[in-house]
Image 1: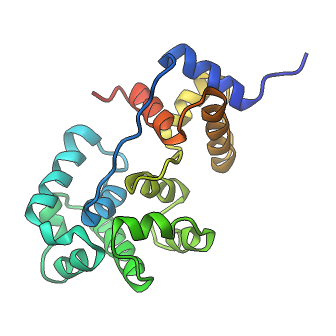
Image 2: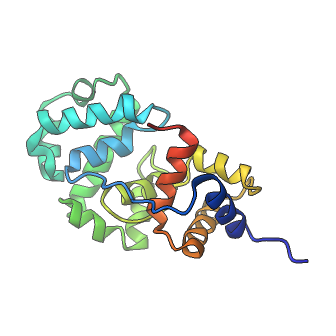
Image 3: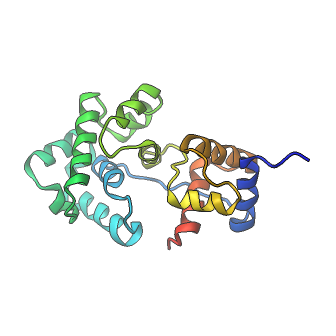
Length: 202
């Protein structure tokens, strides 16, 4: 008897743990300052209670940072650590580096970034920023309305519980994408449902 594939194991676990959906994808942000800061500051933080309120406040305080150009202008005159209320020079440096890269590449709006991420070379360029790995690149895609799977510790925990431990990042992402296709879900919506379930997000 042939053993079930990782995708089928994940699909069965999604059905058993989360039901049949639907699983709407999160909308992300239209404010590019929020997109960049979400990608730079969210890791290992409680998202709903710690990160999201700061991103909402940033949009209120820096309404002109809705584009990369506007956000970069703010960074030139104001302290992002103060605006985000995070004393994290490493994360601030990541946000600045992402901003500079996108600016140099002519990416200014959410729509620009959504289209720019279609190209493998552009995704590879983002990976050159210190602090940006494959998960962050996929996560940025979701923040601008793409439907992608960004594999983090919560998705790895869910996969291990499904009997799929230890796969490399790209293989596990592909297994989640195949599981979503088997179940008829959008990858980003199913990923977000798994993340909420495993992280106990409210």
